[in-house]
Length: 195
Image (cartoon, rainbow, N blue to C red; front, side, top):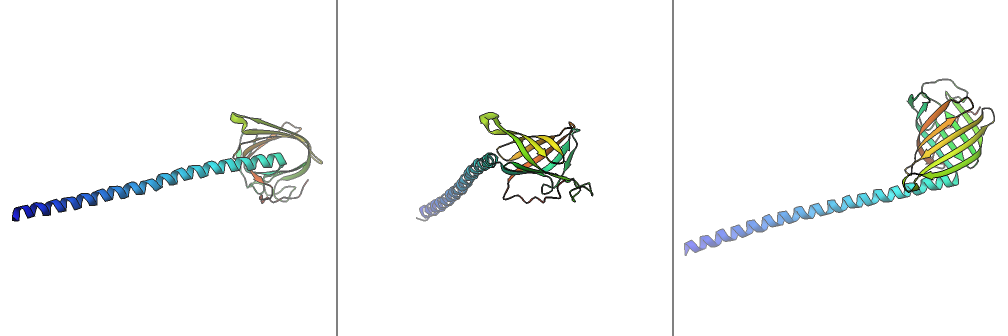
């Protein structure tokens, strides 16, 4: 009887080991499932955020109330300069526009910030949609500044708010702004003295 008892004990130990091993595999599978759900949830959240951002960008453009806060400014030579978006911006509020350039390297300027600030009126507003699914915007503006004359501005806006603006004046010089569109109520730009 001693021999069969050893067989039972070995069999019971084997069964317990197998059950324990199976439960470990089950726990690992359970741990992976929430990660996949979390990944899918993250993707859904990102997709919803993109849709909401595109809706807000469209609303700002349609209402003509936004601020392009520049991260970079470049001239027609192509030299890009990193700038402060609170000091370098294009602000559109219905038929009014403010353009301010205050590079970090200049210490003196007519606006008190080392650059130029100009207030003006928008004479022409042309909005076109283009690209795949008509998701990109092209805004052509003709602007009159009391002391600076007429300027043309072309803004190209992505649905995520990233924007490029080309400002060209009567002397054929061009300045490019690269940045993001911000809701006019959420923007924290600092306006200097206008020319």
